Length: 470
Image (cartoon, rainbow, N blue to C red; front, side):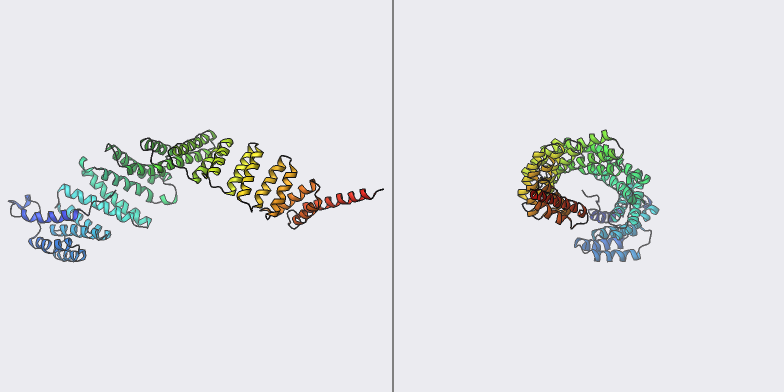
């Protein structure tokens, strides 16, 4: 929605200037009649300015206006009108600085001479506010941006003094709300810390909320951007509980709003994080459950079902200690493609099954991964580890053999050491000596490898001595 309504006013300005010519002959008492353009200026507007504007020859029109201003008395009605026209033409050219400067000159003249009626004077003030806001919004320098927003606010305050109830439309409420929201973000110090913690910025955000709420109450069906701006202000003020109430209300009315579901889940997660920081486990658990319920509600409508979001849901179940449910969702996701079938995800599922003492399911999961990632020695190593944990050393050794055949583990020293240990236990001495020799090449396992080598050699020597006895 456009905040500004200045471009359509250009023809209105010219029309007003033309109509004023017909009033000059009708007035009986000059002081009682509206001010009039001089005949020369009126003629120039009709014969030169208007044709140039109609042809959209902005520079030619501005040249003519400048010529009139050079001859007009600085505080004359002619000057006021020509500055107004210059402002509108400059706006058409997107030259907002010149447009603002000319408009401010026009207002300054009117402040002294009161040429315009109350309605037009109000319109000029509103435009001055909007021009300042627009220039500020496109300025990358935060200090200058803040200065323009302050000027916009000052002009707006003057406008508000005489604003009539009918002046307040949805556009008006949204503009005022946006101005205070923007000021709250650019107030000195606001960029260095959270806005909600800065006193002045907080006051401006609260002011934005006041005008947003007025805008929401001004129509039976207010525009959606009011809700979006209110959410942004609540986030800036760290009023997350209010934000979730607004989002829940929005979703009750429009459950098809995909972004609202994502925002609601993220906000509940933020509340969970805050509870964790405050060492409030009960609240942390409750808000994490809210995140889970939000995602599952969204998924029933077909939203928040990407592999990443499905994975996040699994993680949330882990967070609240629901490991069986987490395993169920993770396994289903890996089978259906709802969760990306990466090796770490298979490893996570296997490790989760071990957490709930379902080692055979962990092995089955890793064997599936071994088929998908057929060149990975690491997966075979993990299978061997699980078998070893349930006292099945023979199976563990077989998978270590496959591990070595596929290139070994991601940490070779650990893999070789484990291989040597298993082989020694199962009296596969040739394998044990070879594995120990490889492990001895790494400083972190050299000592242990030597111990196994010595033990194996001692066992072999003892065995040979036993054979030699009569």
